[in-house]
Image (cartoon, rainbow, N blue to C red; front, side, top):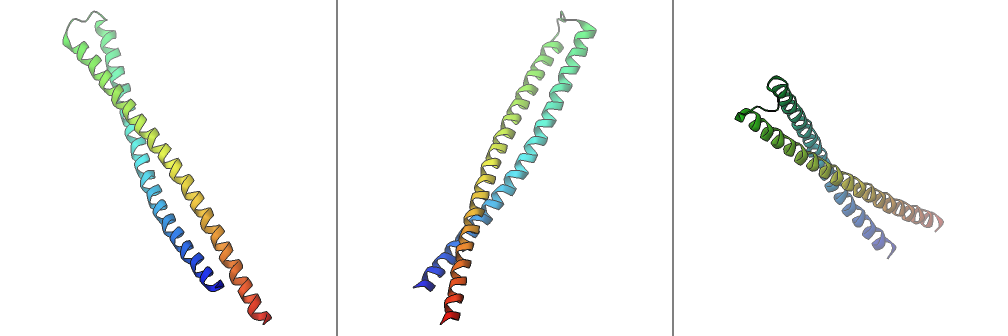
Length: 134
């Protein structure tokens, strides 16, 4: 009966290890996605700041009363770039949040595995001790 219990605990530990490996894979994927999102956010930020700089130079040369479409188009470009930046920033923050949650689950899973492995070691130790005592 003790051997059956030990085998059950070993199979549960193997299952937990499998879940741990799946979580590790998910964490790796999320890290890569998060890094890519951060890169895109930074790129969009630079594009936005470049567009703002360009429009401010246009204002400096021609003033606010520029009556042609170039000025209006530039404002639309700034608005579009800013929205892209905000969208990428939100996506990046969401991925960071998911990554944090997955890392937390990974730590909890590792603790479960360690705890179960400790119990299995204790069982084996008591079995060896009982076998030597007989």
